[in-house]
Amino acid sequence: MKKILLLLIPFIPFWLAPLLAQSTAEEKVLQSVQQMMANDDGTVIFSELYNDDRFNSEEKAFLGRLYEIFFQIPLFLKSEYESTGEIPTRSHIAAGFGITPQSVDLLLTVMESDSRMPTLFERNSLSREIESLQPATIDEFIQRRSGEVKVTQWERQTLPEFELTSFQGKKIGNQDLAEKNLLIYFWFTGCPPCIRIAPHLDYVDRQYSASNFQVIGFNADHVIGVNATDQQREAYLQEHNLSFANAHLDQATWEAFGNVQIFPTLFFVAPDGTIFRHMINYQDRETLESVIKALIQAG
Image (cartoon, rainbow, N blue to C red; front, side, top):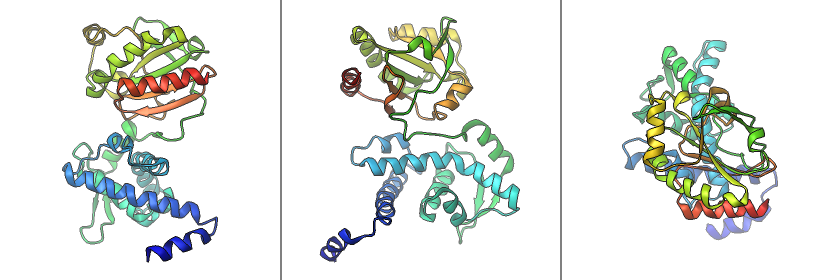
């Protein structure tokens, strides 16, 4: 059977090739998510999967797409129910997002099993279709988390416009950082992987400053509701000997950068204002330096 399949592959119509590629990527991604759920009591750590070197670029793109859809499904359920009076089926949801019902079923299962998620709906135990919605909970989820989450297709895009206030009270925006090799670091106070990566970021900020390179932190405490004071943030910087610039993230900038949900998130930006590389979660110093050297050389 494998030999026959190999013989047939060259004759696949050109229009079917993208569908086959997505199907193959989807199969591997769904298996990996299911395995993580089985090993971790239903909790899915997206960034661990996304950074897994066993995934190729197509598989990572599909995984990123699923993550984006995950945060959009509650709004889809709400809008479809309000416009039609009917709760959309899994097939309806799948058609709306251009994925398979199997992917939709997995996303709904993650929503049900992950203890970090509120109860947004109830499903029929036999058909597994959604049979009731929790409108108030869905509204709250949409307000807090369900904006347009973007984790894919950042590279070679123009850096979004922003103007933020630094920890020292000064305004800082695109124009202040123009023509620099830049690393924008999204973090929040108390974030464990942020604590691990911060010393590496401080090191590269100093090590590559002569090459027109700078790190700037966008602290997300205000937009994600972290109850930390300015004094606590300053104490954190001093405790870890961090000297790179930091600013308070605001709602508009958070949305412009795709409603960042994973911390840390890193944007490496070229002097012409285009995004050179986008990375999520903890990265070691060797990885950071490799990207920074490539960024500087490309400029």
